[in-house]
Image (cartoon, rainbow over all chains, first blue to last red):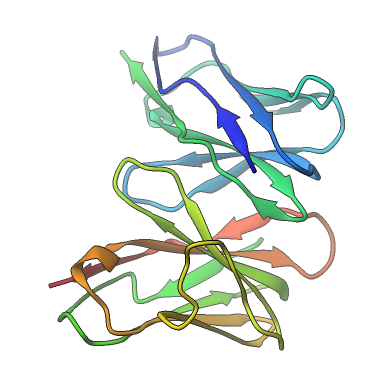
Length: 108
Length: 116
């Protein structure tokens, strides 16, 4: 089975940095995705980690440690539009399992 | 780009009727398409995996006779909710995985189904 754990909610101020942690236990593993989902909309792709280490893409970075079953998504220079749910999704045989998501609220 | 469309974006139907939802990859060929369901404030739950030209693989607890999936081409998969009931009301989202290249799944905009 799949077990994915991430915080339910996080709040930060505009311009700040927030780190969303995700731990997972899966029966198989190809890689780990992070998606952003605004309320009432479908998820949009943010990042994909296959190997250990940090992947940086603009204001968003994602880290993976396969041996620890751990990943984090780092959001820098937060903007109001970053208020959304962030989904950690390990991939097993190319099927994604989603955590409950972390709702990030950015305040002015 | 990697654009996935869904049609319709929302639908309201009467209990007992059937509803078909289309998922198309617009600018790439998709070996595999996935169908998810999401209830309010809950996570996405994978319903089934759809491979072009073969039968869909359903997740445990998902009734294959109720949720009919057809993947007729490399760019189109359809989900038909048969004999819909109010408890089937949900947000249905498809995703498509490219035939070549990265393993990324790209999501459609979703279809909100309301069964009265």
